[in-house]
Length: 335
Image 1 (tube, rainbow, N blue to C red):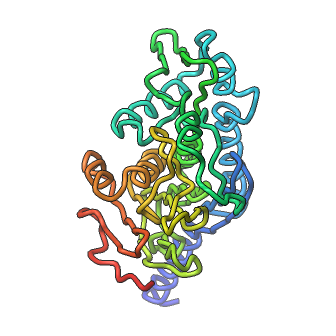
Image 2: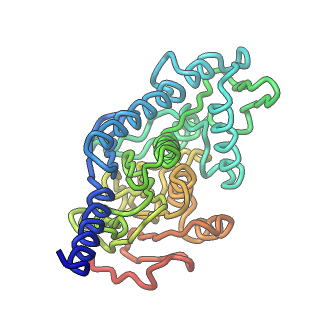
């Protein structure tokens, strides 16, 4: 065989070996965890590795759920709630620091976000059964036990104490985002170079698709949820959306969201949808919820304190507002 031909054959073999050795497969699984749907997508060198890592992700989410879910009576957060007004409860450092961050967000938003919202009376119904607004007295009473300033943390002892009997803390607005972030970090530490963890719309992404293109995330048109307003490419980012387009009531022509202002007891009004992009889903979720409560003006002022995060806001009357640092210059709304 001629040397040149042999060289070319060896070069071709080397190229084929390279690509076959670097081929990536994508595997996806959907499951119910933390009271909601999780879609887990992993890109790995082979199907077995991908499936095994999906198992690890599910195990990690379950571990977190057993720590922080306030509807699980054996969780550490439930123990804190059960001892409200009685005594401090020692918790794992992980739980303590999550509460610490939640209180900080509560402070920054002046209670627009409040980790103690779990004590709120559920007087607003968004299942079609409400025929009139609750009374002013009922609304005021519904938030009597809500108030992050009554949460006492002891960093040395790693304890949490709720001062008022009947107080509760809960992570409905942060838990899924925290879990998706933890799982992404775990996969990166294991050398898994790409994937998406989507917990009920709280999404953490990393790496690229097997074909080398970025993951693409759609922003839903709140007035026609079957359609998208825009598609945004993501590599190692998180995105969360809070909205009232699925659960709301209308009284006297005014739309009231299922997202309740924990400081007042009244539902958020004015905004239909808020999508926040940034480095982690925990913070993005807290911000998207807070922006819904605070409204367009105050919400955008709040977002300026988080320069790594950007947003797209859609008002009840269909106006699209983007933060100045949002990567797509102008979304053309089609309502």
